[in-house]
Image (cartoon, rainbow, N blue to C red):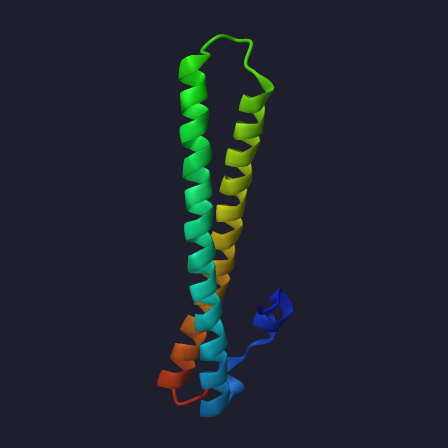
Length: 109
């Protein structure tokens, strides 16, 4: 996994073709992993949401059982992870765009 420092230090216009290609492979590989993780988290979030909705329908009063709190926490955790994945995806796409732009410019700044 590319660190935030590595991403910040990537300067595509200073890289030769092989360097840009190497970076592109690393970035695309990580984007594929992020997409895979997003699908798993989306599934987890959907499961927690379905369970919470079912529990709320069965127990609509103010005295909600502790299990519902756990479901709410699981739902919130999944949503927070999805937000973090989206931020990471945005950073990777910015690097990929810079690599592509440098490629089109022939590596010139």
